[in-house]
Image 1 (cartoon, rainbow, N blue to C red):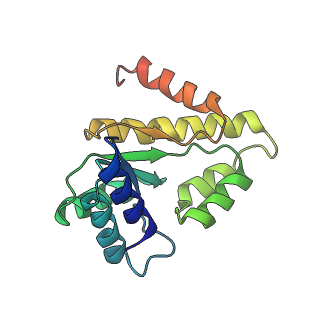
Image 2 (cartoon, helix red, strand yellow):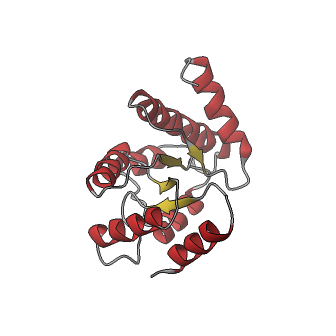
Image 3 (cartoon, rainbow, N blue to C red):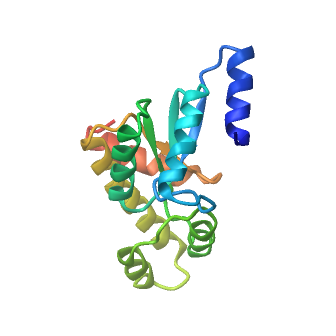
Length: 169
């Protein structure tokens, strides 16, 4: 049993908290396989996780494939997509390597076309990309959205303002 399962089981046996767990649409970087990763996720749910917050992803197809595979594996709790706006190229590349998130060719192309060193242009690109992602997720009926803000609330605020303006939240 892995540490998350032990912790969930311990908390569930002692307290009445609502517990969540992490899930990885593209598979955890240390997992033997995506199938094995789903087995461990199912164990987390069986140990008491009532919802799953996904690692971030830049292609919604990864999330929807993950959600389908969760359901096929008997994981029926809400799965909330994690959204990570692009804040800086350095952070985007470092976290993608650390977390196993794919930086799409479209993102690489579009960030390369931005004026070098223009932080506001990159911030606007990150917000626009996240709004587009959220729009697609919401239209497909996701259980909610989780924003990885990295202590940078401005992007999340702008994303939510755009979504409110479209009547999506």
